[in-house]
Image 1 (cartoon, rainbow, N blue to C red):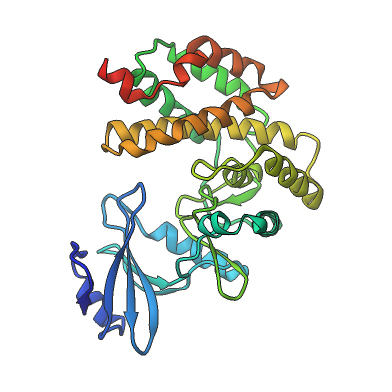
Image 2 (image 1 turned 60 degrees about the vertical axis):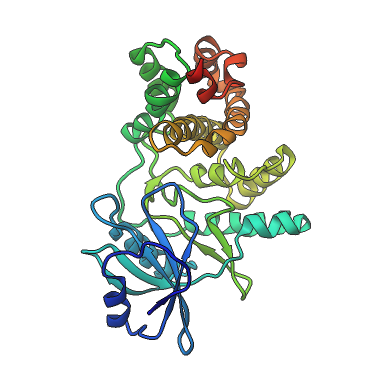
Length: 330
């Protein structure tokens, strides 16, 4: 095995690749994400390319990724094939989907936007019609645990006072229409940086190890209210209409879409603050203005009035424009 660039290799990688039959391979580290997982491209003159996922225990558990990948592949979706695994070391050798992500393609060829988003939504429609994977539910406890990231990280960083019990009550009331809705397999991180454009015209799915059984609007929100890629209001509206018409969604779907959007964007504001505060990843604060714009758009839905009132009372618009690191430095 030969490493093309200097990098700390996972423990036991050489032995793992040899046991997997990739003896004459070179290894190239790839950019990481917001977790402890790392990725490496493995190249072999005869076998071609594959990917190594390094998901080291106890920080990461690769089993959920494997289970969901096998579920998706079994039902005709394009998830990476699993070639080899060592769960004790957290090493997984998987199919390489290449480098062409949906995001970069659309940055270069924005004229493909409607077609590619429709294709991504077709995947969600097919997933909603497929029997659910054997996964835990996305229930009220999960929703509440996630929105509390705002009160755990963002509000303290902004030096804002709040009543946790009031916050919980407002969210419990708002979540009642969807808290018991567990109807589809929800990939949970379905957006332009996790959809690969494959050579055969298909779209490959990655980063789904946190999947749960929940509401069909969740992945649609993840796609159309993307934390990292700007999706215009016009495109979001057009694609939401496309989903509702194609999937024969009921009249409550728009309300549920806005509610899940508010829940998800509240969570992400907390997560991005945590990535700065706990992990020292300052760049995630750059995404906060977009997240506030999306959250405010969701809160404007007429059935989310109590939530909107709480946010307006506790986090005024002028505060939302200030980055937490600026407040912390004062």
